[in-house]
Image 1 (cartoon, rainbow, N blue to C red):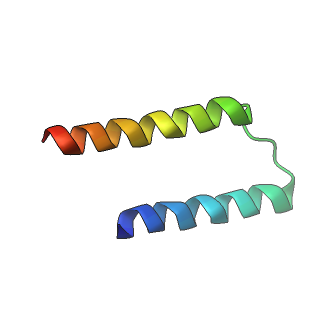
Image 2: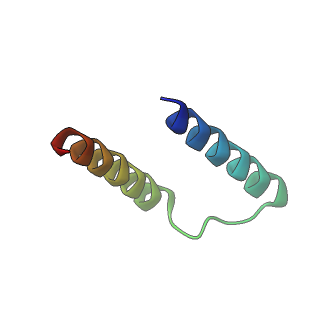
Length: 50
C-alpha cells in the first residue's frame, strides 16, 4: 500500500506546483483520468494474474 500512497503524494505535490505556476495540463482532464484508471486497472489485473 505504501507505493500507492507515495504515488498519490507525488501526484498531489506536482498538481500543487502546476496550480501555483498556473501551468496548463498537457492532457484534457477527462482523458488523463481515464488513462490513470486504465493504468491502475492494468496493474491490478497483472498482479492478480502473476
